[in-house]
Image 1 (cartoon, rainbow, N blue to C red):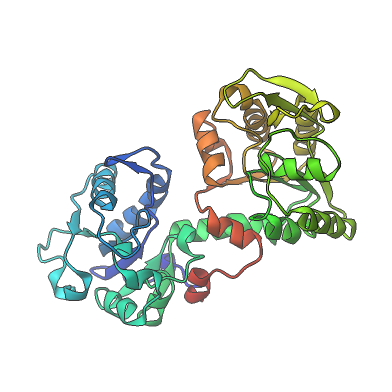
Image 2 (cartoon, rainbow, N blue to C red):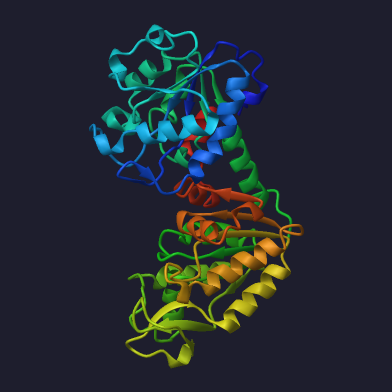
Amino acid sequence: MNSIKDQADLNKKKVLLRLDLNVPLNNGSISDETRINKIIPIINFLIKEQSKIIIISHVGRPKGKVETDLSLKPICENVEKKINKKIKLVKEDIFKLKKEDLFQNPNEQIVFLENIRFYKEEERNDSNFAQHLAKLGDLYVNDAFSCSHRAHASVSKITEFLPSFAGLQLETEINALKKVTSEIKKPITCIIGGSKISTKIGIIKNLISKFDNIVIVGGMANNIIKYKGNQIGKSIKEENCDAMIKEIFETSKNHSCTITLPEDVIIGKNLDDEPQIKELNNIKDDDFILDIGPKTLNKIKHIIENSETVLWNGPAGYFENPNFANGSYEIAKVITNKNNSIYSVVGGGDTIALINKINVTENFNFVSTAGGAFLEYLEGKELPGIKALR
């Protein structure tokens, strides 16, 4: 995989730069700028190299139709302010656009193409569309790791038609994930939460052979608590999970990996209730499990204290209500307090929202905004966007 850093001459080259600027938009207002902040280094790098930059991105799921509320205009304006440079948003039909139509003003250095998912050909990985896109530039850079699990035209097919390179953020993301999967500093711990065990079963199975500890928290732990013969009341759960759970425990027996589960929990009668600590054998029919209890938290803290590497994906409870956020906050604190002595990687939208809330984002070694690509990489899958760069 060639890095854009190793490309000798970028001066005046028209660079098609694929970014993931899929940020939450509400009436044109951006509520989380994490993804935008992460792509500023590649833009500044290409500006310094005197390149002409053509940014390709998407926002939302317009499904091949133009939706004005999913325009990249507010994102374009946000990037403009961050780099203090004028950016033109090109709204013309890409099929009618030619290379010479771009940068007619010699002072222009950056243009945004309008939301690439306004074209149905993008998600179909259409070869003609990718070829037409490729004709707009001299070379292609993928700095959108978080889209690289998608076999889409501007992510994978485009690399067949012009020289293609990995961007700075994409390289950083892969290097961080390599450190927790193939270049491991042991003991290594994975804390995995969220609501659905079915979406993360592949990851858990893949990591059991590599990790020393897998700590399962959040809604997905409820299924295992129930599997072990305890009541979970009205708590969130997934149906038909017993075979998956059995597989996790059978796989862990063949490896020296300890699976850690909640021993006690915090419950409420509803999502807005006051918190109550309960042992697993004392959960009533009208209880909702909404966080991990103090015994469980102490056990997790002890595991983190004795780890060299920690990977965290998914909160420990219903952190949207501060009454049930203590488990997640304390996990974040114990990891970040040890940030000089452990290598820490955190990923997943909810987990990032959580660490942003308590301003500890900078204290993790790496924060991944990738979501699906992050999980598929950990599952051991080859991502189409990465494969295409090779």
